[in-house]
Structures are given as structure tokens and as C-alpha cells.
Image (cartoon, rainbow, N blue to C red; front, side, top):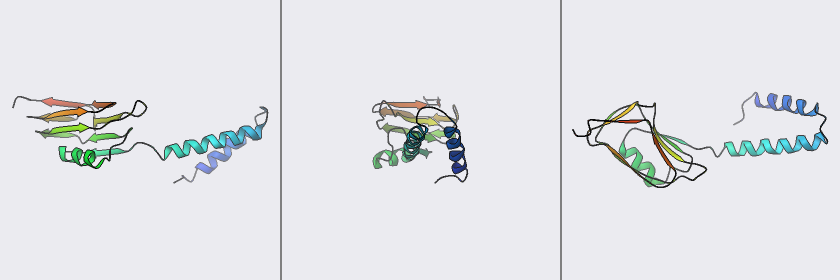
Length: 134
């Protein structure tokens, strides 16, 4: 949904364009408006963020096919015990899928925890593992 001040910004932008003396200002203005429209449409296709805090949350998302290229899966800060995480999804070269801690180093896995990942174009980041032999 557009913000209230976006119309003001666009009109100010158009006034600026109208002050230019580059060839056909009208053609330039219409071309840039079309480009702005495409950018707005692309914004609607932005990647999603999924907040998780258990292996069950990950399983639900992967089994339902909810995670798409470009998405970010964010694990809530905390300490977790015996989390056997299977992260089997695929991103693309243009849109990797990321599994990351809510804050770098803020998620600690203890005990017999592991992250097993499979697929293409994945990033796993920000996790700590502690006392893996317990």
C-alpha cells in the first residue's frame, strides 16, 4: 500500500525531470515512470522472512514448500538442546535462501544438535554449537 508522502515525492521528482533539457523530456518522463512502475511491482515480489525457534518449525516450512528462493529463515535468539535440523531447500543463483540466527552468535545449540542442509544456493550463518559431546 502506498505511503501518503509517495505522491509528493513523485510530483517533486516529475518537476525535477521537467526542468531537464535532455531531448524529449516527455519521452524521458514516461520512460522513467514506466521504470518506477516496474520497480514497484518488483517490490511486491520481495523475499519473505520466516521466524522459527525449533526443528518442528523448520520441518513445517519445508514440508509445506513455504520457503522460496530469496527467503530468509531467522532463528530466534536463545539456547536450544538436541535440535536435529534438516534444511533441504533450494535457492537460485540470483536468490539464495538463508538460514541465520536472529543476531550473530545469539543462537546456541547444545547437546546432540546439528544442521544438515541439502539443496542449492543456501547460506547458513550466525549459529554457535556448544558441548556437542554431551
